[in-house]
Amino acid sequence: MSYNIISGLLAVIFLISGLSKVSGTNAGLSGTRDVGINDLLARLIGVVEAIAAVGLIWGLKNRADSIGWYAAGTIWIAMGVAIYAHFRAEKLKSAFPAFFLLTLTTVLMVIK
Image (cartoon, rainbow, N blue to C red; front, side, top):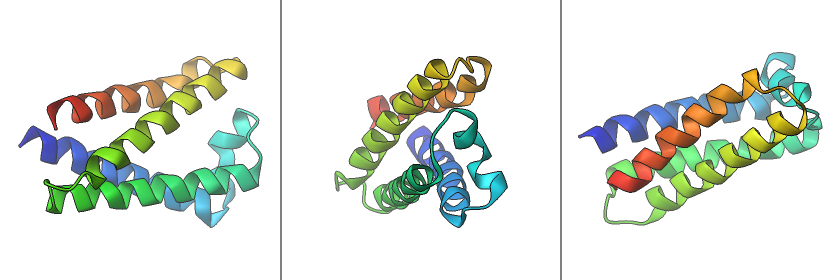
């Protein structure tokens, strides 16, 4: 049951986040611009986030498949890179959401 809740929450968060980056709006790209990531790379990150969110949803429907686990792994890596980007840009306070999502994704991967 907790797997479903965490997976669903992460799917919603990353679908919204990914689509906002892909849209190319100032609001969607402001976070990545703050840490020095160019818009093209940010949009690519958005595509990866959205696909991973769909993978998490797929994993909810088909627990026997590994796709949900791979999607969680993709998000885990993306959040690790996001934390690195925040530290590199010396924006430590803004790294907290990425750290929280990395932790939540770790919990999801452990309880699978």
